[in-house]
Amino acid sequence: MTTFETATWGRRMLALLVDWFASTLVVVLVVGLDAYSRTGSPAPFYVLGVFVVESALLTATVGGSFGQVATRLRVVRANGDPRPVDVPRALLRQVLIALVIPPLVYRPDGRGLHDLAAASATVTLQTYRALSGRSVS
Image (cartoon, rainbow, N blue to C red; front, top):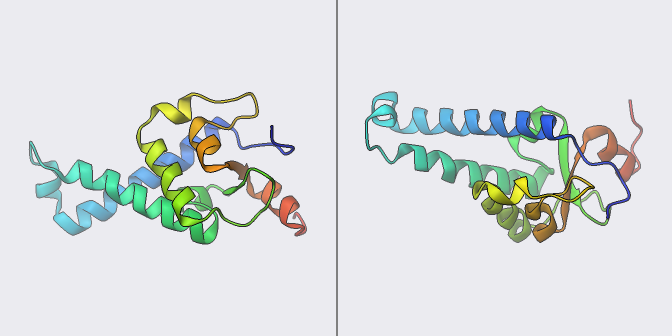
């Protein structure tokens, strides 16, 4: 069990919505609104791909997806190390999130199966700063 508080489900869902909206916007800008909304279009699957790649790369480099950074959340290593998780773990985590069920099965400490598999935890910016020894303002 983690020795620090993880982020609430409400904040995590807000971050997911921000990520999904941003990923959808990217796909619409690339393929066009007509192609995106056409019946049978593969564009919604492109949104999933953009989401997984964007969130994995940003989680591994800056400590959180676009939505997580925007909602003041960070992904840290489960042992309390504030460094971002490595790329393979970040990618595993995001693929499991894309499968939907792993985040819905979680432990009392708030970590879902995706976090358990990646040895990660989602925390607030305040908790992240405390873990990294930075002052909390």
